[in-house]
Image 1 (tube, rainbow, N blue to C red):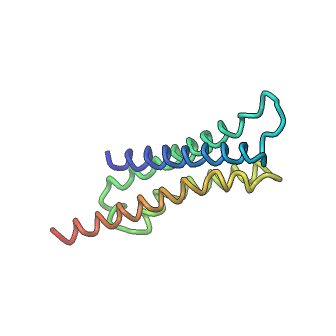
Image 2 (cartoon, rainbow, N blue to C red):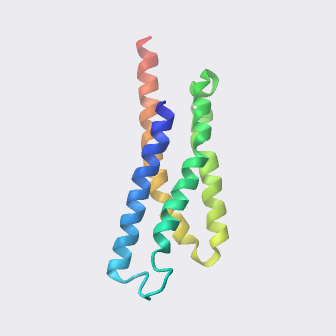
Image 3 (cartoon, rainbow, N blue to C red):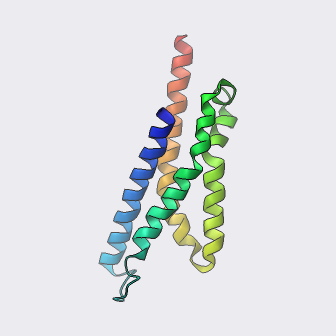
Length: 130
């Protein structure tokens, strides 16, 4: 259950940060100055990128096995490898606008990293109590 909470919290906070960031950029006039049907597309892209990253974090459930959970490298790989591959693919597919993909993905990785470190710290203190 805690792995699903980590994935959902990362998705929700990163999506909120992405949508607020796009709103600020549109309010300042950096993006979306033309009045077209595509003006609100960056909001969908920000949420879509974070949704793909959240789906890519599902291998974190491998931490239910003690072999993965007790080994720091395997645990970190289960959390971060697939999202990093997805981010790399998104950045390569955007070509000239690859920085946009990275900017939409950074909040997700920051939140996921913080929650991963918290998860590892809780695991370590629990193991010391036993």
